[in-house]
Length: 490
Image (cartoon, rainbow, N blue to C red):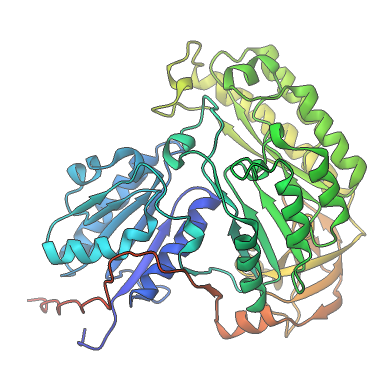
């Protein structure tokens, strides 16, 4: 590496949408500090950042496995640095460096903005830097971001969560809910639209509780309407809401704001009132089904998806039957289904009634078979209907082999369609559904229309939107020093 070359970085992301969006912030921070993204396909980078999750099963094993694979890479690359951030870093703290002493930086969920300074400090002091804050330093969306997509963007409206679900460790790692000011949210949406973005997803750990930190109960419905009114923005989505905070004014805002997509991800977790009580979920099955009924009355075309946990401690066969019953009534477009497993640090991990793995597995298979049957039936009902698609990149793993492209319908369904020259990710097409599968739709009859967009222009040229941050008073690190040249192999 010559003295004029920049150091390269790569961010690896694990876990939820919040982590994906945090990784965009990390990329923006590093580029502001003078780093450049490692080329696609490059197996190594000068700085590798692992943005971790503590929610998934065996998250710690995955982290240390990846760190183990990185050790010989670092040994062969003088000056390379490894940083670990995210929820697992917040939870495990200094023990990461104890178990993997070749790690240079550990930072938590509350001080994402510290990464460039910590990397510089670790390099200058030639020792690992561990910095975990107990409270949010600055709202993450105040930080610069390099976006992953030219046509769709995450916009965080809140961080943290005030719920106390017994299976979830997120509140302990992300803290109490903190809401952004509506004007700041809308300014970020406008900045994305100005760069050609057509779709935004409002993001929060409990997105529809937005306003509780501002003292305004109806703030989320107001924000939906205001976001949908931004000129040039064609689609608005949000994730993930909580049934406790899902009110009729939100249903009305969804139905009455043309840009807001008729898509709703509403976590169920269980259809048993007894299990919901032990989960400390502040709703019961009748309230949940009532929400679904009101949403469908206002938006008959709404696609509703959910999360379900099977085998929660103490779940009986009747409890599980209640869950199957709710799934049959709700007729979800799709469901993210999980087998319960202990998460250290959660109340549920210490509950009596932990179920044998084989019982959980058997129930899980019954649930997924039922949901697949429902998803397929719901998709078959759409054959012959027109769909408007925002053409996507990388969503169809077999598209190239089958002469297809892929896009998302307004209701969030994935649709594979016959490829047409000149159509690019970020463009908008209209077509007709010709075939249905449980997890996607096919439209092979040709396009009815194709609209080229600024997002498509950007995607074609490889340009991704960026959103600038504000001055945070952090130490200036300037441009990083180049790496020393590795010795030639003997």
